[in-house]
Length: 281
Length: 119
Image (cartoon, rainbow over all chains, first blue to last red; front, side, top):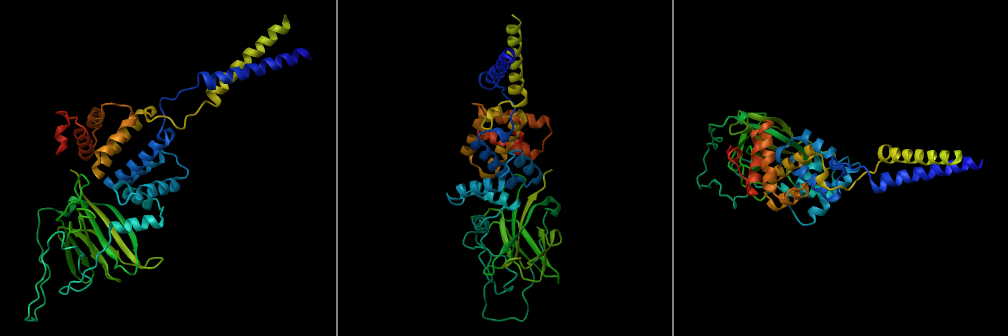
């Protein structure tokens, strides 16, 4: 009995010694860790980079792989916390990107909604010559735009529709990299909000966007009139119960079709945010 | 004498068991390791993301902060090396342009990469 006890004690001391050596003196060192195992500060930097890269190129599959690599079981909370921290400093690209990524992951907070909405705050503008629902809302103070001049002599001839301007850029040069439905409150008209980007992800001002709808109507606007939002941004007020198509450079080159300002589940109607990017060769 | 031999055998068996458990069954796991310990393909991904993020926010200081933890003092060279690797991997012109532009912004250029600055 005494011998057995001695052997048992020796075994336990041996195990403790072995564990102490393996855990404390010479632990296994992994030189090939994953983003999930790095320090918190870099995991946050990784998430911000993934968000900004997503906004930059719209590659959702790759973004998912990057985010999944963090193996964050509480990703919505992490995203929300990070967003809150960045947006506290006021509008900045990182907060915007985090809001976009969160939105894509169906993580939405009131602050994010406000932030997203503030990116594309519509400024309704009524143009008497074309009616209230066919006007691309723009801020003429930033970039001068041709304005109709009222004459004292009324004419029975309706103003001709915008002339089709053929350009050398075919619509196939663009693709939709993001298409997001957003809920617009009743105070704001539902809109089609377009950002045109070049192949490097930079906003392209001066791009002609054509909006056509079911009964043969058409209108156009030019990007870049709201540089405070994005150099390649332009928007268009939608009319309820109408279906719209969007084309770049010419009305026949439809790149997105059947956009409707349907009622949201909550108050308001659906606005559409489109990011169009030049195709790479 | 026999008792001592059995005790020693038990002790060394215990050590072996302890090492087995400590190294293979429940090894020490590091959850807050330095980014320099990341596997090379993750580092490559991080450099690419930094280049994409730079294309988006144009914030060179942020790009430097994001690249520095990867363990290189020559950040420009680090990105340039990744760009050259991207050529070998036949990555798209756009991806190369992002890397080339960040490398150039960090002061690193090469004849092979320069054409991608303005593809």
